[in-house]
Length: 138
Image 1 (cartoon, rainbow, N blue to C red):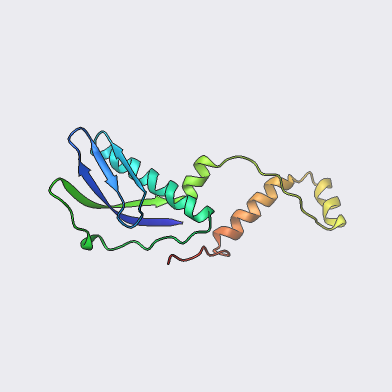
Image 2: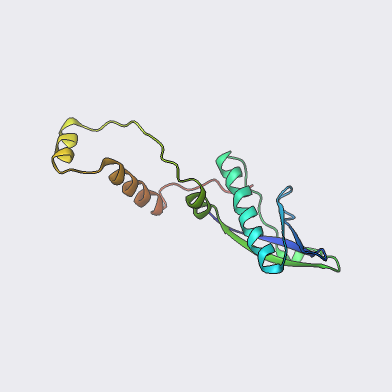
């Protein structure tokens, strides 16, 4: 899933702190502004992925214009993609048991079909087509 959330970046003198007003507990920092923004995207993706994995409600993002910033703070939008995040960090293979008709198994084995690759390709195609819709935020 792709998300955009407003963040508040605070100049802390020796670096930058980042928090997400809509997501309590999601915060990070960086030594400079580019690092702080990159770390914010990473922290946001991790936090939201954990909510998705736990089938918890995803908070709705507020509008950036409604954020109040202090003197050393700026508001910005941060983008993340939890699917891309998961692809980077969750590469472990998972064994699945499945059943197919005997004739199909025979034909596939005769053709030296890589069952794992075919299943992966079919799942990617099915999911990319929008077959499964994630839960909407509350």
